Amino acid sequence: MDIDGVLQGGDITAGNNVTISGKFSGGEVKAKGRIYVNGEFEGRLEGNEIEIGSNATGKGELLYREYISIAKGAKVDVQISKAQQELKVLKTPQERNVVDIAPQDKAAANKA
Image (cartoon, rainbow, N blue to C red; front, side, top):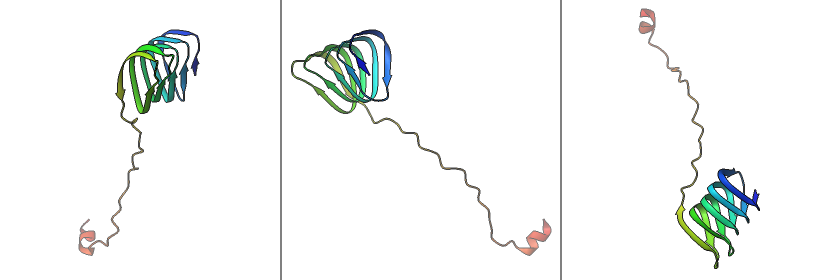
């Protein structure tokens, strides 16, 4: 997803990469891939990788999982945090039926 113009308010959730070369303000951007900013931003950016280019200006919060870089010349006032890896849903093992196949005592079987 590319933000080349102006986007005010609202949240963006992307399954891959996001590029901000225009202006994004007042929301949250979440990306499973990389967020690249070389424009203006205000808000919260959360991604696997975050790269702030030399022409970027902005303020807010940067939350990354693997990698972050801020180029010389960028003018940002941000709080930077490293997020834990995303939680993965594990399949629970199927319920197992246990059958006792041991031979029964004939006397106990006759009482039943």
